Length: 428
Image 1: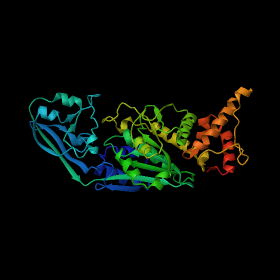
Image 2 (image 1 turned 90 degrees about the vertical axis):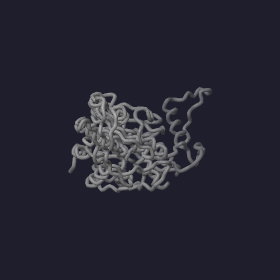
Image 3 (image 1 turned 120 degrees about the vertical axis):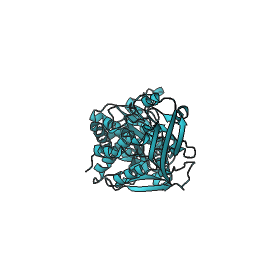
Image 4 (image 1 turned 60 degrees about the horizontal axis):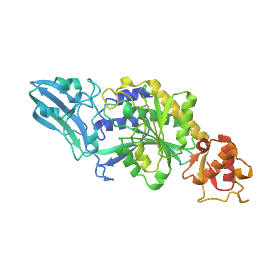
């Protein structure tokens, strides 16, 4: 069986541009690990202004001065800017420098220049080089050759689904592109893969799916390709990012105020004794989460961002620690265990029920201060629970509800079971 580290070593060196032979090789490789379904979206597909770039691969990329190769852009997947145009000619130093990009943080690293992959209608040629080489260039003429192979592209999305007894689905997402990078995207993919590999032969209540795709455009095309019924079955998700470095874990919340996976993941991390920080939506990282949220699907982010090697050639397998990957997997499996253990509350009514009516008998008397009946903290929390149930706009775990109102899960469940006995909610 291929380990997470083995997969990272094999796939990191590939030039996994959005549409490329390197990305296709990664797809074929991962399908041998899990029986993924491949969703291929051709370049003819038009959606919301997104343009699928051509399939693009670098065949040759050199800067030559006086017969000597000053820089070989094909030696590293980041050596040529993403979706660079082909070019051949003689240029001056000033002209060459206008087409060179370097990492302003480190003299010896190559930066990740990716924006043209999302703006294929406006492209230039160029190299990404270490700053020390940029600084060593001398005046004169340079021979430049960038030779690429292009063809109509297709965005390929991998989906693996573990069917549970319920159609309600928890999604784990990751980015499979990012040329030459180990932590950015790929480390999250292998963590998600390992989680689904462990769930593969386990009976679960929830359905769990792993969706791996190129950043942003892949998530958008995947969600746009689902019909309304399919999207409605996706309860919530966790986007997995940069989980292999030694930097601290971070859990970024959804835009929505209550997400079952958030409570489950934090409880799992706490039990494992793993330090982590939390923050509101977009306070830690901005990635595909916002795409899922725009379709009404709460999406957490689970990452080790920031890390110093981000978007550079320093993001290699050497910075990945197996212990970091395993911590993330253990935390996610623990979250799954908690999601499986806590019933899901599904509201079955609209509006406001007269809970004091003997037909229901669910009213919690808060007390009246003016009559000398000061409410206790317990009654206040139970009243919050009573008022909260009619506001449930989507299914959520009993554990999440209990944490929200500050009551023990057992007490919360007992009260919700009374609602279920009246046909007002389902507990599944």
